[in-house]
Amino acid sequence: MRRRSVLLSAVSGALTGALAASRTTTAQEATPSAMANHPIVGAWLVMNPSDPLNARPAIFAADGTMTVGYVPSSIDAERGVVLQGTAFGVWEPSGERRVHLTYVQALSDLDGTYLGTRTRDAYPEVSEDGQSFRDDGTQVHITFRDAANTIVNEASGGGAEAATRQVHAIRMRVGNPGFIETPPVSGTPTG
Image (cartoon, rainbow, N blue to C red; front, side, top):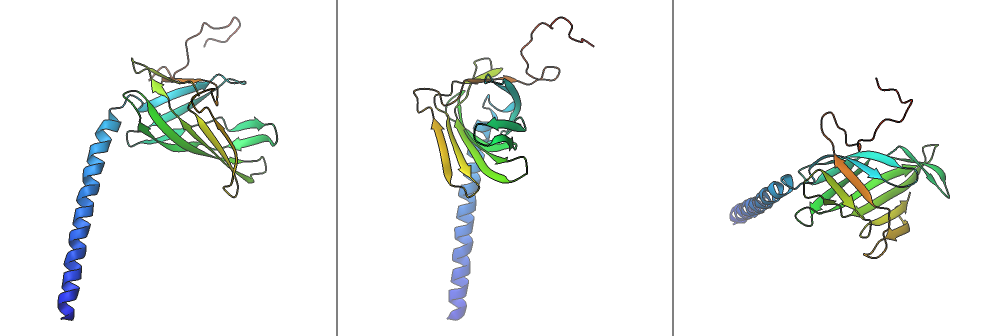
């Protein structure tokens, strides 16, 4: 009798595992092709028209992950110089050319003391030609957490005023990393 119950349990477990694996495989097969063909996939130079102006490279991968290489430091009114790590996150399509992204960025002070994180949710939209994207900041939500992961500050556009200034990006290409072409300033080295 014990033998039958063990055998029955093993068969039941194997069937459950096989069904779960087939469902997972089906879901995984359905998602990647839609994401791989989304116009956000690729390398971008994201520019923030804030004061000071800055540019940062970003990679949107076909598997829904993303990486943004921020400037390594920023000035905080309360903390002074804050060191900020690379932002890692995920994205998903929210339209034919639009995505919803969420990323997290670790923060520390000049002594290396961990200060917490900045999380950003944003909704950039790729242009019709697929060579640029913009986010007007009206849907952006930013969350700051301290070293204990307690939320200490939030900012949100909520559809009304922008939580951040508009950002735009240009698709990076070999020989053109995404900077807008401007004529050289007189006295600028050219070679």
